[in-house]
Image 1 (spheres, rainbow, N blue to C red):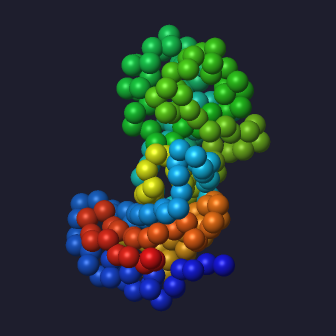
Image 2: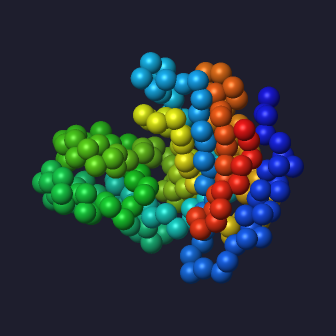
Length: 215
């Protein structure tokens, strides 16, 4: 059962959008969540991903680590790609790979390439936090990228606060509300005591003031 008051949320979203100024970039709307009654040292650290209805950050860049079919699909869609031979040329050099993959927020790899990654590049992609998500042979790279761009991840680390981009100010207020509501309810489902583990929730645009919507 959601404890999020929709009228409070609607007002906060309206205020954020009303306060916006014309800028040279699209502001994202971030969810800021304070967690309570949780011990990251003792309690299981949760992690979970969910696809939300509207893409929060449409300008994220993606690259395909592909077999022939997926590389052809990527080329046809003007999406950056690299094949097994290209990966091999890095010669397992972590610095080179870090520099090459740095611009890309989304890495997707054909299943056949994923299996070869330890042999082709060693542990480097894991070490630079860029290990790709698998694409099965019957999946299309464009569809998979769209899915990845609409997927947000919650992961508790050592501190009891979470921040994740869930919307942007180019969306309608209703689209923002849908994304925020789904994201928060999903996060509550990951917690051992659900809503009882949530201290506060704020939403904030990139350049705006934060608005409390829970707690």
